[in-house]
Length: 290
Image (cartoon, rainbow, N blue to C red):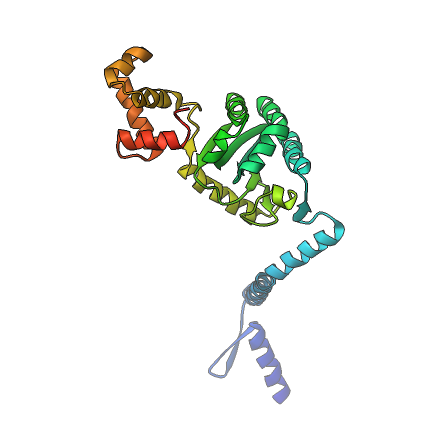
């Protein structure tokens, strides 16, 4: 009798038999099988959740392991390079591989800008003209007075490039498309002083951070005085600096007085000035009146 009771208890556990007040009732075989399957599926789901949790906890270790393996096999995410030729030619090389490549670059000092204007600008302008490259450049306003820079930037603008100026650019850096960034060996330093040592970084978070920094600086920067959209503003400021009134400026330029006043308003907005006098002072400081 004890053996039978144990066997019945086993059947109850399997869901094949129901026990009610000491009576044992057989269940439909399909219902019994469904219960067994449901319990098994629930255990599988719980095991799957445990596996997902374990993978999430080691995802950082997986990333670090893969980075180390990439380093050992060659293609690491950070590459140290040096030399002005390597820097400027690498930009054109990347543009040829994935045109049109959007280049954002900040140049903080006059010496780097002078080197660029003297030796390395022509390939960039040619790449811009051939739609391989789309240049956005920020440079210090003091660089506008360097020999040859105005002619260079005019050519770059005519080729479709975009240039703005700031009083001070925090450091050299660049982003080439969405996948590559360039960083100096010493942030805030002068590239020529450090033999043009720089890093090429292929880490999305670094590229995204530098693109965001560039966009912030670009929003604060001022368009060139002879660039597209600012010629008219510079014209009215130059004539006003000579003592001409709005009506005289309108006659000399062959435009209406209303257009003259609109250009003054645009210049004040671009230069962050609260008055025409302040706009004139700021325009002179930024080289708009040359």
